[in-house]
Image: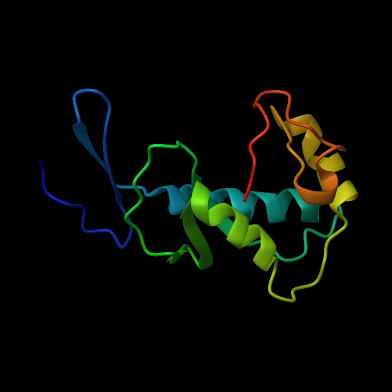
Length: 138
């Protein structure tokens, strides 16, 4: 294995049948922070209120073993790094009292740009995923 990056965030992926090791200098939380910034910018350009945006990186593979700090910071954003067992807890916790956004308006803005949109909770039947089978969140 090579030298670990000198950056604040990085990721080490161990996987595949050969158990190969890959070190990524840009951690997934960094990409999520870029996408959150882009979301706020797209919304602002269209005069849509994106409200409160919290970033979250979800490792959804059922065999993942996640070893990461639950809360991380990147590029001025704070976010969470979770796996499937933690997903239900995060969704139930909600936005921590932050202002609600107009989900329909924001989704209408993003839908033409998205390959897939999957609704959760009360939006599950409004926007069923076209790509993924239904995932049960406990």
